[in-house]
Amino acid sequence: MSGDDGCARLLFCGELAGLLRCGHADGCIRYPLTRRASIKDVVEALGVPHTEIYGILADDTPCGFDMLLQPGQEASLLPADMAQPWPVDVTRSTLLRPVPLSVLRFVVDENVARLAMLLRAMGFDAAYDRNWDDAYIANLAAEEDRFVLSADRALLKRSGIVWGRLVRSRNPDGQLAEVARLLDIKRAPAMFRRCLRCNVATESVEKNEIIDFLEPKTIRYHNTFRRCPKCGRVYWPGSHQQYFSRRIEALGITSR
Image (cartoon, rainbow, N blue to C red):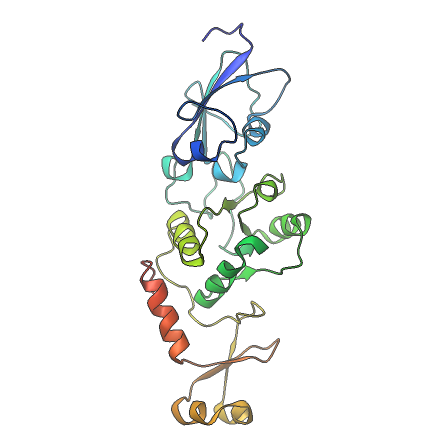
């Protein structure tokens, strides 16, 4: 391609091609450069949130999101599974994400709300509230260093969000499998140690302290209990927990 046609050639590799909202040939696009624009602005204008890009090669040279495209330039955009490191390690600094997360914790958007409950049951800190708007979620992610999970492209294009995932699957188990593969989650960090309602770590509680709130069968068959210090909800290892353990183990995630 000659440099005087005013276009750059962009190649969206792997699963990124399926996220494009414009015509393309196997992920390849000739993009007319009618204004100065960073590659981040360009790819997002084409429909792909920056959270989905883990590598950029401009004329085979690694570059960051702020690189300005030039006429005649060729740039390849790489998804997570075609870049390094793979699987994604959020605690490791990269060219595109120089500030890593100290610990993996999430903020979940309303459009994948049930995913928050699954993550909490596994022991992950997964902030969620159905009343939060995009601006609030983006600010929370920035202030508390959280990984954003959403099916909303507009949210994930916000500049304040560094780490995130455009969730593709429509069902909660598929969503959890998708996140687990991306982030190499093979084991639940603390099964049933977090309140499903409040996202607060639960505490051990003696049976005699809560016995007045329990059903007769629960009193008879269970002796180990945990309570949320915020809402007071009580948890015990009943059949619902056994069911959930089998559910995540079917996804290849160890529950113990």
